Each structure stands twice: as C-alpha cells, then as structure tokens.
Length: 394
Image 1 (cartoon, one colour):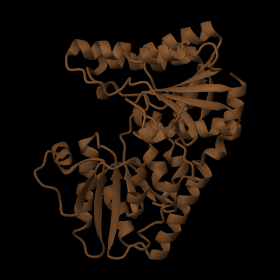
Image 2 (cartoon, helix red, strand yellow; image 1 turned 30 degrees about the vertical axis):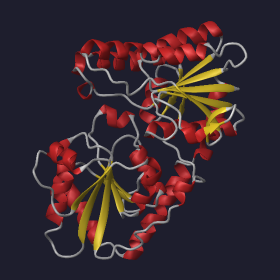
Image 3 (cartoon, rainbow, N blue to C red; image 1 turned 180 degrees about the vertical axis):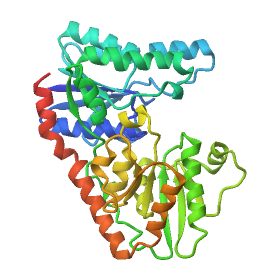
Image 4 (cartoon, rainbow, N blue to C red; image 1 turned 90 degrees about the vertical axis):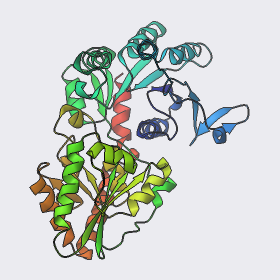
C-alpha cells in the first residue's frame, strides 16, 4: 500500500512532530508499505537530494509543502492564512491521482477545514483516510481565547471532523478512549523511537552523582508558576548541607526565562542552554542525572504525551514528573525516576531531598531501569502487530 503522510510537521528534523511521524512511518514500512512525506516545512534539505529521484531521508521520499512559518503581518492576512492552510498540499496530492496515486493518506494534527476537504477528496477518490491525533488544546492557550478562530477550529476538529474520519492514531490512552466512545477505529501509538539511530548510542556522561546533581528541563516553559516552583524548591534544598543541585534549562535563552519569571536575575545554580539542533538533544540529556517534567492537571496535558519523557528514558536519564497523561503507566517511583504526588513546593522539596542522598549504586540501578522502560514501551518495533490490526480494519 502506498501512503502519503502529511500535516503540521516540519520534516525531517525541525520539530518533535517530525520525529513522531518518522517513527510511525518506520512501522508502516516494516509492514511492507511505501510512505511518502508531504511535510509542511518551507523547503527540502539540499543534502537529502538524489539526482533524478528527489529528496530522501532515512529511505523515505519527502516533498516540502511550505504551509507553515509564513510571515503574515496584518490581522486579515493571518485569518486568511489560517483558513487556507493546507490548500497547496491538497492540490499537490490531487495531482498524484493517476500514476502515483496513494492508497491511504494520514493527516498529522492539522486543522478542521483541511481535514474536511481531505475527507471529501478521499471519499470521492476511493482513498483511505487516517488522522494522527496528538493534541487537544486548551482554549486559554490559543490566540483569541475561547471564542477565537483557533479555539473554534480546535472544537470542530476534536468533536466533529475527526469522528467523521473514523480512523484515529492516538498518542495517549486518553484520546484512544475518547474516540473509542464514538466507535472510531483507533490504535494507540505513544511517541516512539528507533533505538538503531546513531543519536541514541550516546553513552551516559554522568555516571556518578559526585558532588552535584544535574537536572535538565527541556522545552519552552509555558507556565510561569510551574517553573518558579521548581526553582524555589531547589533554592530551599540547596541551603542544606550535602550535594548541590544544578538546574539546566534547554530550549530557552536566559532573557526569555527572565521574562517568563518576571525577575532580573536567576539563581547561580540555574543555567539556560538555549536552543540546539535535535540531533544534539541526546548528548545534552546524557550530561545530566535527571530530567524534570511538570505539567498542569488539565485536559491538554492528559490528552497529549511528552516526547521529552521518552527521550530522557532512552538516554538512560531517570525522570522526575507529575501524574499526567500515561506517565503513571511507565514511571515507577524510585525505580526509573520519581512520580510526584502533586506540584506543591513541599512535594518538590521532598523528592529533591531524596536525590541529594542517593548512592551511586542506587542511581545506576535507576539509569538501567530508565533504559529498559524505553526499550520495552517506546521502541517502534513493539507496535507492528497493533498497527497491522488497525490497518486491516480500515
């Protein structure tokens, strides 16, 4: 079967979404299907070009649709850009009807109008359609709030058009259960990794705890209170004797963090590492003892699932996280990390005090379990049978 995978991702390596669709496609390829990416990035990479064949990444052909990151200054142009996003992609896919026609189209996390138009097209053309659903946004997080255009689109996408498509790849059990209630054909695929990729072969550089424990927070902190709570807890813990805890923030620059926290200076134990290339992320994880992942107890956090959680475990870096989404299914307290019983200052202090007194032997055991968790639950090879059953029922 020939499959086109398209939607709001920047292939091959510009965002976490590109890594999700890449590893999902590796499942499909292992089952004997051909997958072509129509990513929404601006252009293809020159190093991926093969003369007279096109652009290829890890054996997958791809074409850039240039749907994202367009500069739109006026309000009217922004609205028009939002409403027409995906039109170029649809035109390009329509051109394949004939010699290069796909049998199936998978849409990653796109918006209502694009999915609706694609549903009409696939029905008329006799093609199969699948939606890869990874987010359920909070209206308060979107431009215009509850009554803004993105919020209305979010509602229509999750409540209406995805259900009409009826074939859902769900990133979390929350989304799987939600769409199962409407009798949709669903398969649960969490963020997956390919353990054979070179970037995951990076050895752990922090083999012992020594005189300091290094924590890493990866990503852009959207909530000031969550990040402030971590820093306050670390400041309190570092006042006591014993090992100190260093807090490294990856993905945000110092000025950005100062603005988010609304402060003029950061504590001496807090370092801002800024942005790095995706292939460098495993190396930075390996330079730390634990990663920190704290999210609000809201629908968006339960519907989605953090790629950072999977990346950390794959790098043999135990995770300190609170109970959102499917994390409690994978994170065993004091075995492959620490499962926080809430986001309170006292709870953060309790766990940070624990890691200050860990022995090297206890920490080594946690590292081993972290890697085992990744191998057991997030290796794409483990999801071939589930995916095959899903495809057979479309």
